[in-house]
Image (tube, helix red, strand yellow):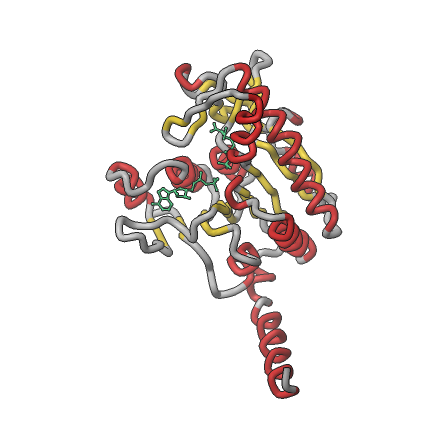
Length: 287
Ligand SMILES: Nc1ncnc2c1ncn2[C@@H]1O[C@H](COP(=O)(O)OP(=O)(O)O)[C@@H](O)[C@H]1O
Ligand SMILES: CC(=O)N[C@@H](CCC(=O)OP(=O)(O)O)C(=O)O
């Protein structure tokens, strides 16, 4: 690279850092819940890059909370074990044998992969599920779905204690039933319930598309609640995007300031969203 080009690069980098100041101030001590979907968990390099961004957030005074999914990893394990499963409106019909595999994969393999990635970048992550400290007590969503849970009672005090020690919670979306049952909770639903219980400043739903698309396939950068309801009715929002957008609406009703649905595979997606003027994805706020 020519000396002139190198100088230009340095100046641009310094400018980016300097321009980040108002955002760093805005998010100082803010609570940011990040939902990492199974489809957004790519290669080990992408995971390391995500972990690095989260450690940076912690370093500059944000309280990040990671809530993860892992649908594709559950599918892979069910496939190996020869267990079939089907989805109804983005939720897995979960019988007794399936919920055991779901807990094993989410609280074990997926949770520990993320915890280890964060710790390798110099952060201190602790892995939990909704069972720990009664964080997420659930009721059955619908008997037809089996052991699928809807968060009914949240106890987020442990998370606040972890923030005080600069520890990053990494949470698997497994709920505790009132009679000892284990519930499979959609990752987006769990992230929304945790964000609402914490009255989070931001809920970032990371997925594998650049945002919510309209019927023509263009990403909508800002959306209102009524527009989302209409798009679900019309079938423009379908599959896994249904629980995601419904989560955004309930999270906002529950006191979360804003929700962003964005592409978690884009490099440094969360940093761009929080610390630059280049907000990414679809932003959903109260009407
Ligand atoms: N209107 C829409 N805009 C964007 N994606 C949509 C829409 N309707 C359905 N989808 C689908 O939703 C998927 C995201 O949900 P899901 O696969 O459950 O993601 P994750 O595993 O990241 O939680 C997208 O990959 C896309 O196929
Ligand atoms: C009830 C229900 O559907 N639970 C999900 C939990 C994992 C999840 O939500 O994973 P993603 O975020 O990767 O989609 C499931 O069994 O697949």
